[in-house]
Image (cartoon, rainbow, N blue to C red; front, side):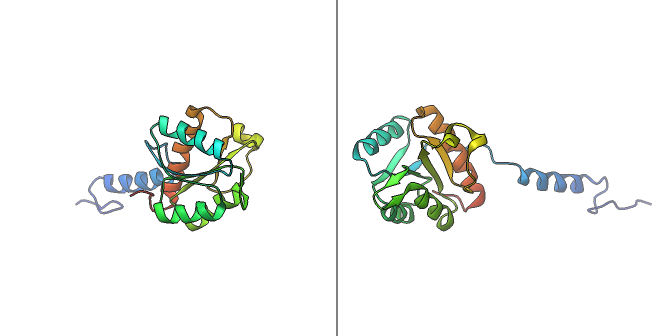
Length: 164
């Protein structure tokens, strides 16, 4: 006579696979492959153009270039990009305000603030802004790309998946 094991299988393999699957979902998401669609917000036209050029050279698509919080949020709603990349100061307020509002309204979009804040270069000094990521204002394209990939992975795991 066989005694059924947990999960009703002969050897308990289904029960073991089930618990392994639950553990795997709790893991921090790994970086995702790009390229990404980006809404870029900066009040300074020269900086806006320079950042857009750097992103495009890295293979990303800049779907909108704007200068205000309002325009950033409207374009995030319209384009549903992978990333909302904002400068520290916009025409109508601080870039972090746009990033926080975007994170709340569109959890599948990765908001990133380009910041001179020490936390942008030092993860131990980062403020806790939830899903809002920081990138160094003067960072290399490789640093920005790495931060974007991690932020998009985090947003996709907490939202419905931008661009999908």
